[in-house]
Structures are given as C-alpha cells and as structure tokens.
Length: 80
Image 1 (cartoon, rainbow, N blue to C red):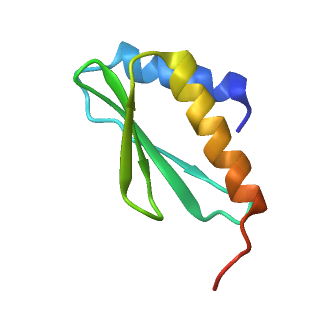
Image 2 (cartoon, rainbow, N blue to C red):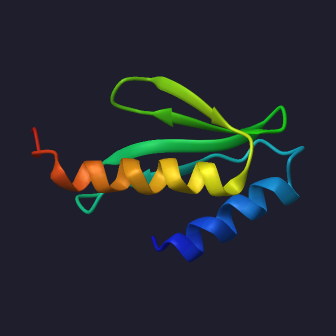
C-alpha cells in the first residue's frame, strides 16, 4: 500500500474514532506485519512478530513508523 493510501486509511480511523477498526499491514508475501488502530486519541501500532505496542499522537509519526516497519519486512528473510 502506498504512503498516500496509508494516510487516507489513518484519516479514516480518525474520522470513526468511536469505532473499533483495525488495519492490518502485510508484506509482499501477504504475511501480517503490523496492526494499526486508533484508541484514546493515539494511533496504536502492534508489531505482530513481537506483540510490541507503540503509540503515536499524529498521522505523520504513525506513517513514518508504518513505512519503517514495511521497509524492514522487505529485508527480513522468509521463515516458513
């Protein structure tokens, strides 16, 4: 997904902040890498391989973290 589309999806989370919407980002092999939701006025990113949770207060910082995670997933070897 492009950064532009990711930004639109994050804006959608903001628009429907009272709903429980979770976005799942996958790598090129369709393996889930990251879940993103909007809770308590923050974007919550959950890294699925480690269950580490990070929070970001604005779209720009959340997008930066998402892009970094997606780039890292391109460099990791596929383990089956």
